Amino acid sequence: MSYSAEKIKILEGLEAVRKRPGMYIGTQDETGLHKMVYEVVDNSVDEAMAGNCTEIKVSILPDNIIEVIDDGRGIPTGIHPDKGISTIEVVMTILHAGGKFENDAYKVSGGLHGVGVSVVNALSEWMEVEVHSLGQIHYQKYTTGIPVAPVSIKGETTLTGTTVRFKPDKTIFTTTEFLFDTLSARFRELAFLNNSLKISITDARKEEKQSHEFQYDGGIVSFVDHINASKHPLHKICHFNREKDSIIAEVALQYCDTYNETIFTFTNGINNSLGGTHLEGFRAALTRTLNDFLKKDQNLSKKGTITLSGEDVKEGLCVVISVKIPQPQFNSQTKEKLVNAEIKGIMQTLTSEGLVLFFEENPAIIKKILEKCILASKAREAARRARDLTRRKTVLEGGGLPGKLADCSEKDPAKSEIYLVEGDSAGGSAKQGRDRNTQAILPLKGKILNVEKSRLDKILANEEIRTLISALGTGIGEDEFNVDKARYHKIVIMTDADIDGSHIRTLILTFFFRHMRPLIERGFLFVAQPPLYQLKFGKESIYAYSDREKDELIRSRQNDKVVIQRYKGLGEMNPEQLWETTMDPERRVVLQVKMDDLVAAEDTFNILMGDDVSPRRRFIEENSAKVSNLDL
Image (cartoon, rainbow, N blue to C red):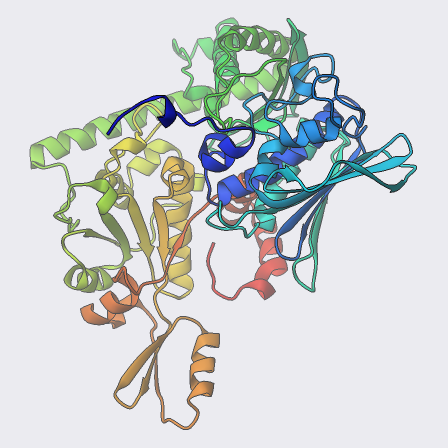
């Protein structure tokens, strides 16, 4: 086949976006779908950060149409000097066009990766924009990014701002169903990061509308307060806002009497879930500052020569880091990690200054924090010895896998799955009924340790958890855990459909959330859904997975005689039944564990698994009526 000039295709304008949407929006699943909304809302937030917008209204309309209304200045409406057409059309249809490329218009914004309203326009079945400016309403509509007609004057107005409506193109995305909770989580974060900005979201797809309104005068201090609401803080929140070389760093932190770390990092309002150079600078400054104060404390230093590590100062820490940078650089279109090299040193300097000032003014607080970090250091050393002991035992006993694990023959993790099964009885049935090529079985005896209330050394002393860690192959702890070493890319929690089973499932989920979260983020964790009933209509057997399904089956065959068996546990099923109802990939029902709202997940685990009883009682009272299947 010849390779010549005519083989080179030039994609004009937004055609490139539709041809290669993944290059611009990241993914074409629900993550990319929701990114479309964020891109439009981020433009309104940029107006708020510039001091020109006080309220943003987001609506999910019937047929999954999104509407975003703000009260900012509105997109400029004049004729663009270079293009000779309305600036509205330039912004909405031309890549890399916008006010963010000139620092005069926006000192900070969400970034310059080509993802913007023009990309959203290209990936929408249709979009329309209304700009309220200079007493007039300017309007234009587009189909797949192409203007239907020139910008027109729709009417008069006394308001200012921009309204954007769009319907995602179902030929581009694998789903066009927006998730209210996912969008709500993002808008809550934005409201925390932008003092006093009001952001509301309404879901109008059903007769009974859902809505949230977010507005926080305390900014990221309110954010930390919200995260720690169900914990026991050790001190008042440390908050500082400092600037150097046009870079603004705002930090709010607080230690609690818990054992886990909670961190949120943002750049120009964008959530950097993988952290980046701003987090690296903060960590370095925190560790060094705490060690400096430890050396000065004669009473604490008498207890032995201790140098705190980065791991020691994490325990119980909750911190929100928000930086504003004129020209941010990210690792990818999804902006999960900030990579500006110069930010680490600047962040380290600003954090050190803020921490030193706070600790010198609050000597009782630094003492409490240091005492907690020293205990964490001792526990870390105990955990290291426990890990070393486990490794030595493994070597002496021969082989690296626990004896109770029935492994599969497949060695490719992407094709392998492991069932974490409640009890030896169900484990025995699962071992007999499984597909030995691809399905491994690990029976777990009783209820594992509640890791929400335990340090790592105590966790590693628990036999069932050690067995689980060994079977998964990832290791545990920041210095050892490696998600790429996971031996299975599908981990299925399979417990009884009763109260005890729900509790065991919650304990296992807590362990994964606190100590192996990347497995959840990669989409490796699932929950099996065993049937509640077997209905026999003569020789025909049908399984029902809920009371409603059972009742509907009986109602649909009311002339038939039915024998109903209620399964109290997995152990009541023989291997064949367990296979066909819960383990057969062609017929089983499994739920993938996702973290659409990290703040809500954090709060839920704190409430359900923490020490404080009153928030848990209140949670149960408020949510008991909504429960159809007791699960997390």
